[in-house]
Picture: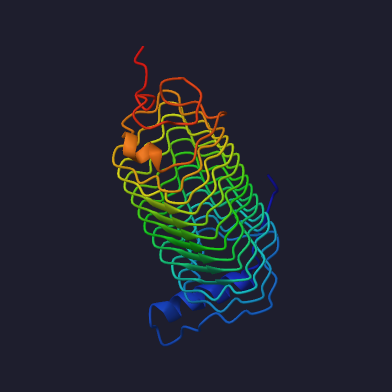
Amino acid sequence: MHTAFAAPTALLNQIERHKWWLDQRHDGVRLYAENSSWNELRVEKADLRAALLSRSSFLEADFAGAQFNLADLRLCDFRRAILTGADFMGAKLENTVFMNAFLNEAIFADTVFDSTDFAYAQMRSATLQAARGRRSVFSQADLRLASAQQSHWAECNFSGANLKEANFLRAQISYCRFYGVSAERLNLANAKLQRADFTRSELYGLRATGAEILHSVFCGAQLAQAQFRDANLEGSDFSSAFLEGARFTGTQLRGVDFRAANLRGCREIHPDQLALAQTDNRTVLPNGTSGPYVRRSGAERPILR
């Protein structure tokens, strides 16, 4: 990790006067610092709420614990910055860059991301509740234990990200790419997904109870012990996926592609459910036999060991 330098006194005075402005003091002055450089500076727990900072550069700066609530951060560059525990709630983030930034436990609740780049960022235990992301990049980011309940994502790229135990309860996700993510025990309960791509992803123990996952792709994904109770998987592609031990109580499987998928030990699949899905002679059925599935064959019943 790099070493940042203490901010000059003049800059600290500007930040102090900004805080006075936030406190509605007569001698306070709102911080207007567009196109400014904060590169490699260290400011402890800076209060930059509602500051005007668009097009500014924070390369390798240390703003751990800073408050950026409602700040204008459009077109800002935070590459490799230390932002652990920083609060960005309600900030304007458009074409903002956080590549390789340290954002563990950072707060982005109720924040809108538009074409924002978080590639390779460290975002463990970050708060993304009710956030709205559009055309933003989280590829290779570390989002373990992130909280993203009731968030909205459209055309975002999470490929290669670590989403282990991340919580996307009731999230809405459309046209997003999750290729090759590592996401053990990812929570998608009651979420709504449309045309999401989880090809070759590690999704052991996925929790998708009550989820609506339409026309999405899980080709070659590892989904052992996944929970799909009362989910709607209509039109989704699970070809070559590994689903051993997954549960499908009340799951809608119309048009689901299970060709070459491993369904060995899958539980609670009703014959009428499985008959609506596509299987072939490469499919391993719940009882361990090869497909295709034939109604009333009993192959939907797993062999209990």
